[in-house]
Image (cartoon, rainbow, N blue to C red; front, top):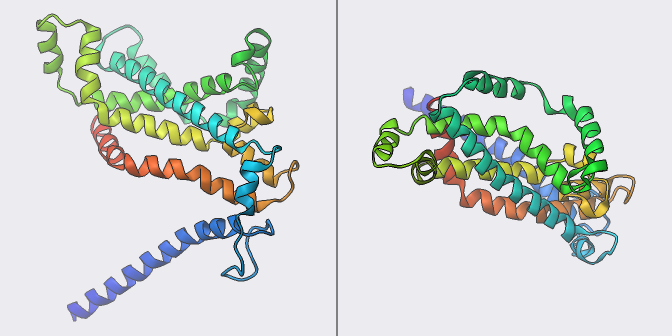
Length: 285
């Protein structure tokens, strides 16, 4: 009786898993099928298309009105810069909050946590006006510039990064710091020679999540980047289904697949760091 019940439970579990797999794969299939659909529609009338065409992919790289390569480069540059700056700024701040004692330390940590509670879109209007004023003085980091968008990304992600990194630093024994100071190491040497090597997993997680999040971000980028040549790939692809290009789902699907390739490669290659870094960073807080 127990064996029959166990088999029935196993069958139901496997069936449920396969249903979830189908629900996960089906949208991906629709995007792939639409990218090869020469009509430019979202999907064909039949489940399996009657013909395939590379027309949508060729359009992305040959149409002068569609700077798809520029969009990819913009996304890659700003995502890479955000990942690097997030690691260096967040690591330094987290080290200071974890190892150093100064006035306002506890209040600063609580303030960072409190800011993360409010959705970022609540500040869109204020940020827009502020960056518009900055543009009149420093156009390179003002409204419509990639530099200005990078500053906004960095400011919005610092709270999460600092808390994540600080939780990991708290797991590093203080005895290592004390031994290094006895040997004459300065605070910077402790930070660079002890903390950085030991915190490599969580630093990789911070860089990876910052890169993926920035590469896929749409709301802020669509609001601040108005020039077609300054757009990121997410904003540029949206124009295929907007007023500028009409409802052209074929190139939109093709561009989405191309843009997803580097993210999938990076994510799979660093997947072990994500699990290890997030688990270690959550042990203390």
